[in-house]
Amino acid sequence: MDPSTRLKTLTEYGNAVEVDNNIPPKRYLLHDFKYLNCRYYRSGLEMVRMADVYMTEGNLENAFILYMKFMTLFIEKIRYHPDFSTVPVTDRATNAQKLREVMPKAEKLKSQLMECYEKEYKRYFDEQKAHEESERARLKRLLEEKRAEEAHRNELAHKLRLAAQSPLVVAPPIPTDDVCYDLLDQDKPPAATASPATLPSPSSLSSVPMFDRNMKPINLLTPSLRDVTVPRRLIERFKNLAQRNTDDNIETCGILAGKLSRNVLTITHLVLSKQSGTSDSCITTNEVEVDQFQRDHDLVTIGWIHTHPSQTAFLSSVDLHTHYSYQCLMSEAVAIVCAPTYNEDKIFMLTPDYGLNFIRNCRETGFHPHPTHPPLYTTIEDREIEVQISLW
Image (cartoon, rainbow, N blue to C red):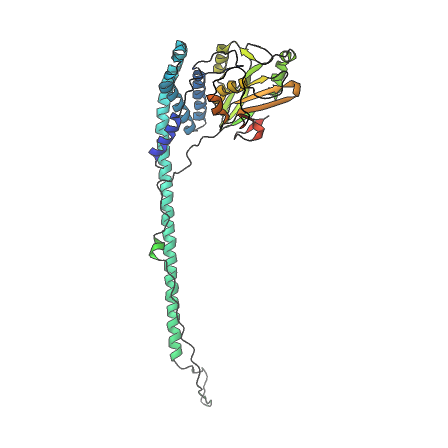
């Protein structure tokens, strides 16, 4: 597609942001939820940090998309959230400052992308033009060769006709005065008939592959899940830190934070905040400090982890709603459940084709029944989700 249409498509994808009114704009605690990371404002800052990483790595398209999503979310969409008025003034001020930084970056990126697309389009057009000229030259050579072959065959046929009309005796190069020739009637060889050469028809000459202006020079960015790297020692370390609570049949939860590099999300930090819990719930108490820590260390939230001290590794109805608040904002977000009693450690995600939408529309709170078919969530090992989890 032409550069303008291509940039428009990329911009529309960046503008495709939905705000779920059931997720508060600012994180808060809900007794039923283990760790409800309702964080549009926090996720907005993480979008910018990931966009900055893409810029550093030269991935301009992904950087532009994230900048556009950030601006669309906080300029057009978030103000219509029913709880928008509850957002603290300080958070709005921080967000407004970030918008002032992002807008010129996005505008500059837009110009850079247009320039890049124009160069790619010209290069693609030139390549197609060169291919057309090469194809025409090939067909021209083929036509000339066939014409030359036809002329050669016609010439040969003409010589054979002449030979058939002339005597078949040729004077020998030595004296033949004493030699008597008995001229016998010879069968004349049949005159060769030249078969007409098959030439390319005018319609075949016009079938040269032409440049399709609807074709795009390169594949436009398509949404896809990024790889996630989870250190093995992180899970063991978390279980060791939670051992005292596990012995007392109390859940422990933590945040999985990390970095984005070369389109791979790597979990580098396990953040354990102040919390209180029971055998089947966990509530955190120092959200502000956690936010500040991640901001100071330039970390993005990649998921969460918690224990089931006396149960198997699965996602309860409360866990599903908790994880929705992560995965709806980052498609690759993971939920790790450790069940020491059963020696199970599993990595879960909501199924994007069903579970994510089902939980989005579920208005129940606390522990409540959910249908089991189709499955609302899956383990990564089930390979039902196109995301590669690397353990190291």
